[in-house]
Length: 309
Image 1: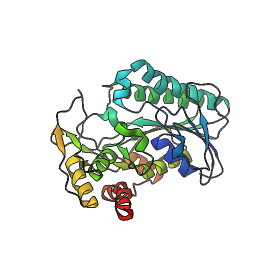
Image 2: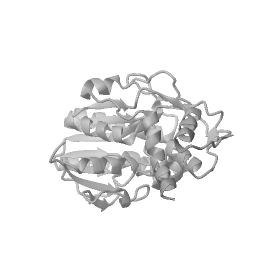
Image 3: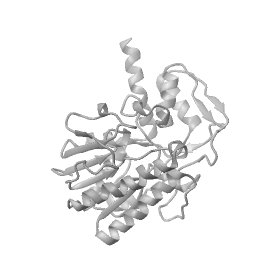
Image 4: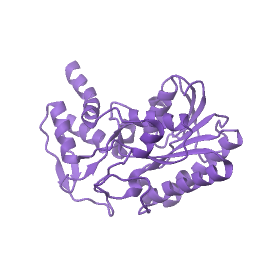
């Protein structure tokens, strides 16, 4: 993508800011964020930041491409306030698409979620039946249905990307998320500070961990190819939390044992794994950062600190 005027909603958040910074190298990028979950400190100077909500009606909408990453991005946020979750994740999506559509934008890439697949050790294809078990999942499925409407009724390119366990680490743009950050970031930070990370159950749960740089490339390709439909963005490999802890300890040169606690959530997803065939065939995209390399990148800032000390 080159010389395009681009809007990234949730643009000061974790995924949104990485995407905005990535795109700003070759494009005119506007990042809109209400700073509830994001911070403009995540953005490079090349990105124009506008503090606004996706529920507002006065943010810049005269763009060529919309990347909609704004959301209340966790199950817990939704369960605390389902009405707010619906307004932000569903109404905010419709409001934003409507505004850019009326300004002539025909290409939208938006964040969905892999949570709707539930717990699976087998690769999850986009074609499988899914259902909502949380308000968060319901809101993302609603986005997918509204995207069908815009594709069918308004002939827009509407690509929904079902992200799998996106991470970067507190040394990147994830620190502001705190307890809502990916477990890789949280556990590496705990171990680097000589604290025992808390794992639910026995630590055997698995995730398809996907580095945010690969996610940013996927978003850009979805726009370049003007895709419509839903697509998985993962690695096609899964790692247990116990293995993750081992990799973090090996990288940091530590030997911190985790603390195993009872899971406090009903319907906790134990395992995830992406089938990325569809997106690969559509764009040629493949993940470039394997999990061991990803863990090294997460841990690298802590190693640099120890050298400086």
